[in-house]
Length: 139
Image (spheres, helix red, strand yellow):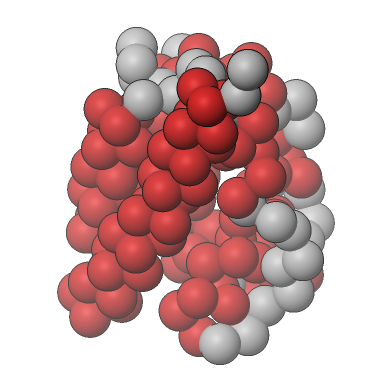
C-alpha cells in the first residue's frame, strides 16, 4: 500500500488546529495498515478512515494539549476483539506509534505521547485479558 492509497484529507477543524498530531496519526496508520501483524485487524474493522483520523487526532490532541473533542470509548472495541488480538499486536502498535511520534513531533511532545500511549496500552491489554479470563470461567 502506498501513501496514495490512503484516503485524502478533507476539511476538519480538529485536524486544522492540530496539524502536527494529524500528521502523526496519518503516518502511524499508514504504517500500521501495511504491517503484516496488525494491518489486517485495522483493515477489518475501520471502514471510515477519514472519520477515524479525525477521531484519533481529537483523542491525541486531548491527551497532549488537554483540549480536543474526542467522545469515544476506546476500551470497548478492543474488548470486542479480545479473541483476535494478542500482546504482540499491542507491542507492535506501540513500537509503530513511538517511531512515528519521534519522526513527526517535537521531542518533548513525542516523549509525552509515547508515555501516554504506553499507559493506555496497559489499560487496553488488561481489559482484553480480563475479558479472556471471564470467557474461560463461564460454564
